Length: 459
Image 1 (cartoon, helix red, strand yellow):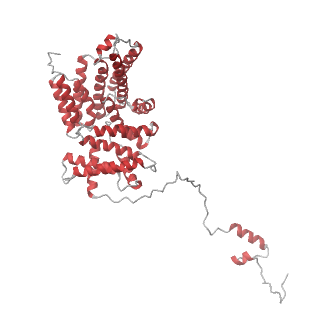
Image 2: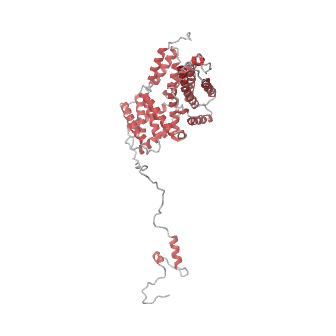
C-alpha cells in the first residue's frame, strides 16, 4: 500500500536488516527471505568463545605455578668444564657400550635449569664438578683453579639437590637420580674411604630407584639411568656381602628383559652375569645367617632340608655360570663388553665357591656336598681376572671403577708374591683416577699380613 503525502512513516522498499546491509531487493524475492538468509549466512564478527575444563583446587592442593626463567648463556669456563665432563663420560663406560645417555642428560640439565626454584641447577653443577675433577686429573692447561671450581659446584649441587628432593611440584625426578649418580662418581674420585659414595648409593640412588618402581625403568631416560646405575648396585651388594633390592622378582623381571634383548642380537652380555651376581649376593646373605646359627648352637641339630636347599641353589648358580661361559664362546659382543663380562665371570665363580669353602668344615660336618672350586681352578680364575683387567686398563674405555670387585676377589685368593704384586699394580692404576682404590689397597694389605706368601712349591 502506498503511503499518503502526510504519512510520517518512512517510505521503504526493504526491511531494516536489508537497509543496514544495503541489500537491494528484487521484486520477485520476498523481503523477509533475504533478511533470514543474511542472518544465517553472515559471518560472526566476534571471536569464538571456547570452554575448557578447569581444575578445582582446595586449600591443600593449591600450589603457586612455577615460572620458567630464561636460561642465561654459558660462560667460557662452564663450556670448558662441560668439555671435560664429556671426556670423563667417554673414558668411563659402565656397561662396555657407548654413552648413549649423554644427549638425554644434556636435555635434562636444560629442563632442570628452567623449572628449578633455586638459583642453581643441581644437575649442571654435578656435571661441572665431574668435568673440573677430570681437568684436574689430566692437568689441563688453563684450568689452574679446577679443584676449587669442582668443590664449589659439588657443594652447590648438594644444596640444590636437597631442595629439589623436597619440592613436591616437580613432576619428574629423572634429573634428581642423575645428579645423585654423578655426585657419587665425584666422591669416588676424591674420597679415599668410599663412605660418602656408599651413603649416596644406599640412601640416595638405590632408594630413589625403589621409590620409582621397576615399571618406571622400562623406557626413556629412566631405563638408561637404570642400566648405568645397576652395575654399581650389584658391586656394592657383593663387596659388602649384602642382598640387593635387584633380587626382588619384579626387578629381576626388568633385568631379564635386558638379557633377552641382548640374546635377540645374538650376543652374550654383561646383563646375564649381573643377574647371576645378584643371586649370588642374596645366597651369601642367607648362607651366612645359616652358618652363624649353626655355629652358635653346636649341640642343636640343624634341619638338613635348609642345608640341602642352600647347597642346591649354589649348584644351580654354578651351572648357570658354566652355561654362560659356553654361550660366550659363540657371542658377537663388543670387545669392551666381553672383557668386563669375562672378568666378572671369573670373579663370580670364585665368590660363589667362597660362599661355601670358607666354612667348609661346617658343611662337611653336616655331610652336605657344596659347589666349591679346587685350588687349581681358583688360581686359573685369578690369572683370568688379572689378564682381562690389565688389558681393559690399557686399551678399553671401561671405567676403572668396574675392576674393583674382581680385583678384590682376586686379591683375597692371591697366595703367591707375583699375584699380589699384579693386583697391587692394577689397583694403583685405578687409584690414579679414583681415590677410592686406596681403601681396597689398605684392606688387602691387612688381609695379606695375616696369610703368608706361598711359593709354587708350597702349593
